Image (cartoon, rainbow, N blue to C red; front, side, top):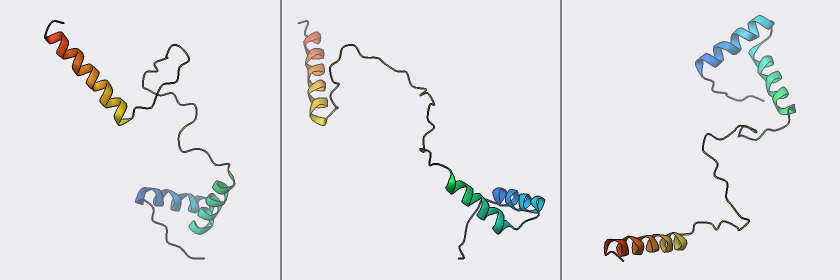
Length: 91
């Protein structure tokens, strides 16, 4: 089957050079690479075991942390605004 494969110029140069060194055609080399790639077990797109650069905050207790819904966010902001208002009046 024929298909068109667009490769970056530098990658194509590397493939062409490798095929020449191995004494094979680009078609044969790419076919072999694709077959080998398909035989490998699929890996997740993210790198497993890689640690996040973000700090991890451990919570105390065993309660479930609720999802931040718009309603919950509005309630939290309202309580925060009321607290600021009370402090501004010295209460």
